[in-house]
Length: 418
Image (cartoon, rainbow, N blue to C red; front, side, top):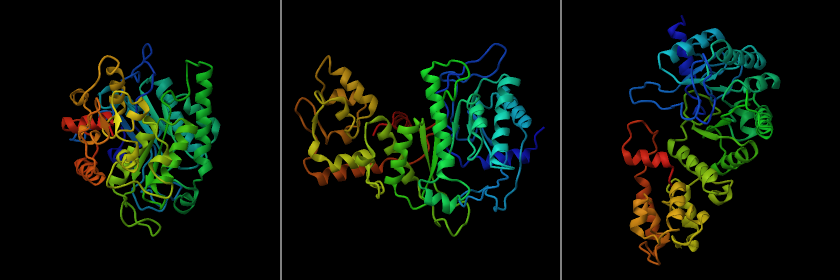
């Protein structure tokens, strides 16, 4: 039996890594196996009473050789330490799965003994789950910087997803706050995994594919002085050059004291704005230069899409029945799904404002930027438009979506409409 105190230490230590959402894997069950990560088999939500409906999120060890200033588990921190063996983690995962507590595993670790040894033990844990316990559920594995590429390659054919956390947006900040890590130690393995994934795609490899659910990463926001524009530049490069599934942003919280770190946290609003800008880059066809200058932060008053529209009022209003898809995507209040619905519906009839309301277009925002059949119901005054959008934006709450959110909040968060 695993000591309950150990379990509490290692699950608490893992909570600061946010890059652990699942889905996207197509690992099916096999005869006489248990677990299934195919299609929608993974649920990654938490109920308000704290029950986990998803991944067991745990560290193998929090006894770290590294001394990253922002990390609660850093070498110099005076915190309780604990470690688990691969067999102990395997037993824990299988027992939790059989009790229907979890659907999969998020496994990370502090760097103990050496990077190679840590990565080797993580890989051995996943190997045993797959081969000895026939576990076919979802597994997200954290990559260890400076670990041997051969060990990483072996791990990548066993896990569904891996993540190397960039943590800080610049080499300078890494040297100051995480001196044992380098930009190359994080980006090189990410590039190698990307190349391996592309090789499998081109050669139509079907068995033991490299990371069927791809890669993710995380950046800490506010622990270092880089502005949002620089952070988004790095984000855009990671999506384009590494084909990452997600870049996660974690607002800095001063859980440890250090003279090199800010005394106050970055706040949820800044994190929220970065996620909105990230959404625009991935799904709305925006370039970072359109959203934010490299040396600037995103607007706290308006979401990035509204801020862009207000800077480009000369492009509006646009006619909803004739505007191309790429233009519709830039209208505040019209989300990606709604834009596609509009282009489909107008093939059969001319749309009016009532049609748009039925499509769940956010008319309080969109009306200032569109016409329907030549009619315009927005404001001609830029000052009034700004005030209206400011009031509408103030109603948004920057909080994590729960299973029991109000319908309107849930819809907005699920659709990502901006």
